[in-house]
Image (tube, helix red, strand yellow):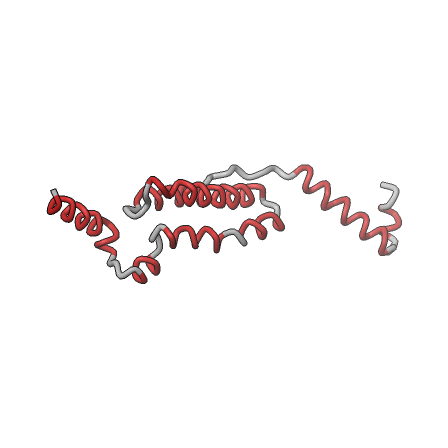
Length: 133
């Protein structure tokens, strides 16, 4: 209240201080959004649907989950700078999805068609196993 009259009279330092106090109040009283875990859910669906993810890929999967959780957390908090920082993690998440052959481009680069990525590759492996048996 003591700074307000100076700010109203045009004192730039007082105006700056009032703005900083207002921003801080906004942060303190902001109601965080509910974390819907949308990215984590999508990542888990991709990992579970991929026939190329093996039990030995645990570290890769956990890294992807941590990144997805961090982005979901930042988006739910609503803090602009935190959201921006978290979005810089998305290329790393895309790299993990690429390693799992969970992107159209990575499947194409591996010479796989969508039909093969859904079940054709697994069927070929089973056929080889049957021939060996």
